[in-house]
Image 1 (cartoon, rainbow, N blue to C red):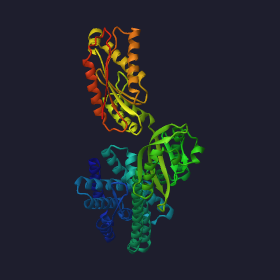
Image 2: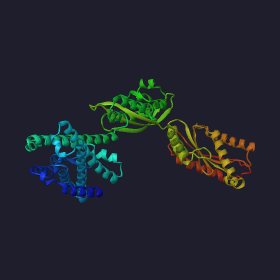
Image 3: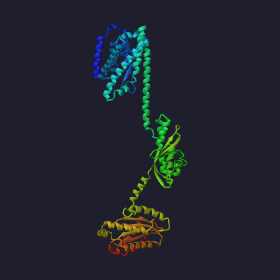
Length: 552
């Protein structure tokens, strides 16, 4: 910048020294007044750039044709400095702009003098030569002026010279060429008709200026609208509405959507307001097991699990009523093979231009494996890992359900409370691993004795419990069967010890009312009465005493 300033100062000093004062008259003074004090204040902001342009170029070119290059250089430097005073408060920018205009105008005058000879004679040359002269004048002035400033901006912003020039000065070429042609016409008219022709053409210059200003404003408006449209496009939905709005070619948009829809990794479907499948992709067919033709002939209600259909339809009705825009829920579909398919379903309603419901967009992701994992985790929290029986939490939860269902029948409920005798001695004598085997074998014998519909649990340590629905005279038979199971195991001598358990029972008739906790407490009490009557060793066989207690 300072190199340009110093070079411009040298040019101004040189031109001031060489200025042909004798050629200057009131016409030059009028050009100075119009250019420096009027035209310099009439500027236009360049769209999408950091600069401004004015119509003073016309008067600078006119001064060059009428009064020579020196006068034009001084006028250009003065006009540039006056314009910068109004637009920028920094002194270095002001003198830099003046230096640029001085250097570019001096270079333009030098090129014209080298190509056409004396500039002062260009007013009287033939029209083709005059047109060539003004075009060359505009080209050199525009090229050097814009290049110097673009180079400065590029060095400051660390971008390429081409990017800086294209972004800031491409549109300014119109003013240079229109200004040069206008100056050529004015110079010819003044040569033939006198300086009053200049005053008569001022309205023409004003018309050109305001026409160009309107043109730039339209460009700026279009650019602003383009930026706003780009911002909206980024916020549009990724599906049909997004493709339709951001695409300029309908066919290309439909092809992009069709590809994204058909080959999406998750299930996608278009569903009519009454629930019929209008369009489905490959993924949803794989998830549900139906072919595309089979789905298109039915509706989503037909394959929705009955227990989930009410909630599903309620959300659909809320969207149709305008209460919500989208809904997300986890629901069950019925696979073509008959099993349940858990899916995370997202639905949104698309309306037409009249706000009437057009169709729903369904997104369906198979989460069956996740649901199975959740069930597995939940089951693990209710099941004793060693024996496979319910733990205390699981036994209480399922016993309460079993109690409510059995009480509606004529069967008697029996709670069996069992304690594995001598577990501590087994652990001390043979190790905890063998103690675990004893617990697992006890659980196995309980499973073999009772029905699969009965609820069996290990409450912790060596304590087991069973809730069974029996006929009034079956309780003793079940206990006897359990006794035979233990005797049979001990007869096999499969372990270095003999298994023995102490048992207590509690009975509840169908017409009686009692909680599962009360039944367990009664059976526990009965079991300890039994346990106190015997002493069991892991190396000996002990006879079990069976004690039953009816609980009212």
